[in-house]
Image 1 (tube, rainbow, N blue to C red):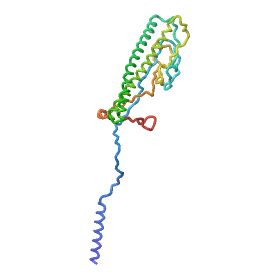
Image 2 (image 1 turned 90 degrees about the vertical axis):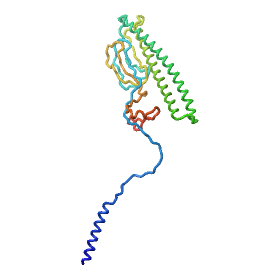
Image 3 (image 1 turned 180 degrees about the vertical axis):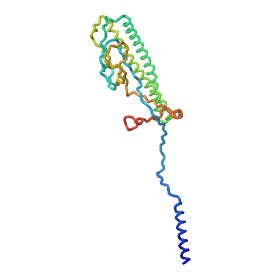
Image 4 (image 1 turned 120 degrees about the vertical axis):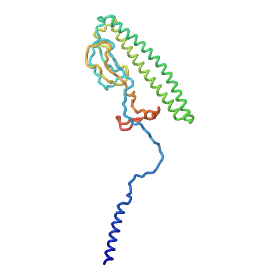
Length: 270
């Protein structure tokens, strides 16, 4: 019987030792497996930013008078030369003093100078734009023949787009200058004693196509010349402003792709 008890004790000891050894064995770790492939790697700099309209235009009263209530609201669409922004009932021209007439004449002279200056600026940027476009076409043909690098192609493309934007801004400045000159001349005509303008109204039409950004003077009121009325702009002509760390800024070069997330649509804007 002793040897049976010894065998039983031995089996118990072996079972305990085996259980302990089993509990301390290495456990398998679950992993995700996939096939190794080669492909492009995208390195990004992620920051918040804001968009803003590049060119804004503030419409002011070209002459003193009674402003009718402005019916336009923020966000309303406007068309250059067609949309009536505001209506003014001018003062009696016979009651206007010589100082006001001199100010009106000075506004006309300043408007004419602004138009000439804007036209000269357009001539300069138009020539630069033409040179940039010609250079881009030449480099593009060489790039198709693998005669120039991608970096060179991107550089001339950036220059061309920059000159095109400068030309567009110069055209906008000319349109605004022409509008202000036309308004100043129309206001000066109110001083002509031969013109029966008493009781007539003066319409201010939009100088640009776009939308109303802000209504600065909505209610009817008697206003002096030069009072700001509305702020206009083209929402399709935007620029993006993003602040990044200096350590990230040195890695950003002209021509890099920008992806805008969390805008009005789910798909990113390139």
